[in-house]
Length: 343
Image (cartoon, rainbow, N blue to C red; front, side, top):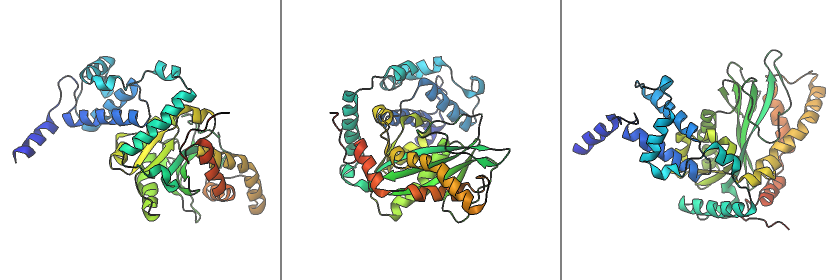
């Protein structure tokens, strides 16, 4: 009984300098640590944004405008947690980060250590457990209700002034494409027309952290169970998606389900992401031709928001090639997991 009372007291106590409870501070430090371990570097501004989110969720009054702490708060926090100071990154550091073959070799070694520590010693020998995930965006005209060809082949972040359909999916080194999620702008109703896509929404149709978390929790992890694929699995993702790595997503790592690891920048720069080589690029290259064929068959003059998912299904079915997916993982060095020496 005394332990319960102490626990309750600890939860309710608010630090007079940092304005967070011990539980909230542990959650924050744990999130910053895991982000660093997984390769998703966080800026100090990211940390302050997360504190703002925590304070707003708590409903407590603070001395900060809109609950957003200032740089003085950041200095106090990092002074009290010096081990985190080394993990925090500045924007200048990220811009000047040296990208070399030596650092790529270190990345491969670090991934092996990470997966071993996460209980996945045999993971890298099982192609079913090695994934590459990515996002693709399709601009839409809200006035005309039409969908345009993919905006980019290399997973660019959509501009907030426009609206999009975004799709997120994953492939594994065994050559399988996992079910995906489509993200629609708020207010746009999806027409499934017999497709199996799960649809989520965000303000502009761009993939937000809550969308990605729901994708993993409601689509990806259940598929792992149905296929009887052992966990943890590793999912490699472009490092620019650090905004998707929330404390709730880190829970999937702590629970031993998913190790979401940022790809080394050199793999991205050399255009060797498996999801890009095996699915995104073929889809982008084939989209216009497939849409023309679909228009000819149906008599439609354009792909509307109501047509999008059936047309997307059609193109993905045409371009999916298990052999190409496996080759993409070999080319990137992600399966077999090894650094390919340049000749």
